[in-house]
Length: 354
Image (cartoon, rainbow, N blue to C red; front, side, top):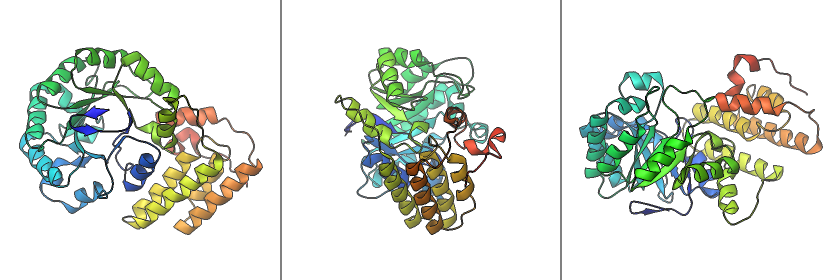
């Protein structure tokens, strides 16, 4: 697939996710076949001002390519300045976030709020394109802000102002995750657009991916929650297109989990990455028996060495059939509604089998 002047070797793309798509996460997704990865969302103002903490969030290796950066902002001049700075870093693509539904973002008139301001949105995209030095600009949007769907109008404005791709989450800002994505709107946008349309929303497995492509004719797929603990989805899709079925063995999952821990241990601040390691381990094993025991042990651990031992021991118990059967459908359902599913009230106090 080609987005502007950027060629990528797979239709499946890793979505930008705050506090998740750091270097470790992106590397593993790329190793498993993601055609493009995005850093987590960063402040355009922070980049324009050279803020250290902002710049840390978009850290990437010279060898990491293609890689995109997603910006959060609502001022054309600031976004233009941020894009100019990113162009110096040779990023592969730059995205404008017009989809974030978080209240504190919307209150600051950014993210999905911009869907209510079509004229301003056009000005933002135009400024980004003008300052990009040829780097493709993408825009991530939703179907609308509340119940009123204006995605066709929004998509036309984005295209008319020079963007190379639109990433569409097929829900409105007010929709919760228990609302199925309205794929028919992606199909309608695709019919009227001359740029790449990337579909997003509840792609958790290859069947979901195929369903979205068949129903929307979209050019590519943006994988978000479906990649949590599951970088294998990229390889599964790529092999599926060649008629090959693939499912990782437990030994392969263990190897990737340990690699993920190692990468986080080597990177950035100890406290943040230690907590991230725990979250990612849980996501890798969420569909296996013994998940509540694993959670209990992880959150009592205090060192990277300790969590590695916990993971290895957990994998050995899975291999031996140590854990009794659990209702993993409920875990999976709760994960889809809240990725930190273990924090939900109804999940507290689950039994650990020692």
